[in-house]
Image 1 (cartoon, rainbow, N blue to C red):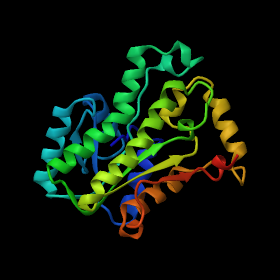
Image 2: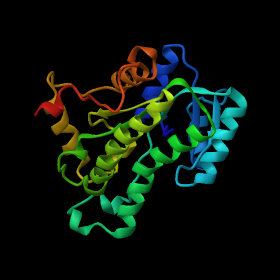
Image 3: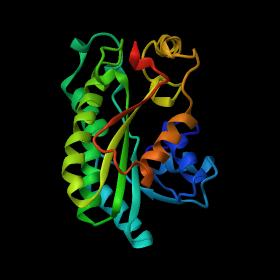
Amino acid sequence: MGVANKRSIAWGCAEQIKAQGGEVVYSYQNDRLEKSLLKLGLAEEEMVECDVASDESIDAAFDQVKEKFGQIDGLVHAVAFAPKNELVGSILNSSREGYLTAQNISSYSLIAVAKAAQEKELLAPKASIVTLTFIGSERAITNYNTMGIAKAALESSVRYLARDLGKTGSRVNAISAGAMKTLAVTGIAGNKDLLEQSRSLTVDGVSVSLEEVGNCCAFLLSDLSTGLTGDIIYVDKGVHLS
């Protein structure tokens, strides 16, 4: 969930999952984003419409997936959004509407999809759910503002979901990826400075790649990571050490 183009972290995850022999079902929010997926050459891939802001849309999407596959071994939640005016200047300029939108799409949606997947018995035994976060959840990153707060809520949701879904054998983890030139990052004011600062703080002076994040995602979805749940895994080449 969350592929927009070939610079999306979700795309990197999907590519590495397929490289390990996994089959991927892509979701799109609306007709416009469906066209974006088709432009990526995914016409022959499984795709479902799913707007994570709508419980009815989530239910319909998961019903389609269940009818086709029965159960799934994993779910990647790579969905986040905040109005652009929330990603510039001071947090004091945040609006109630913008704040709630960021929380709904970027944080609550993980709970919504996990709940629907469990209720529909869509998750196979030992299923794994992976979401994506950023270090702005714990540090006051310039201009990140409302999204940073939403990511903090997302990480807390990971821990509570890990506890409650663990009773049925499922795992829930998050990847805290380093800053990359994705569509999401380019929506942040001063994103060039953010990207350069992040690169300069890596241990080798080279930004993390989509492939590296995707590799971690594939690992977390596999049976190689059955001992991990409720964790935030940093894939940022050491930026979080600074």
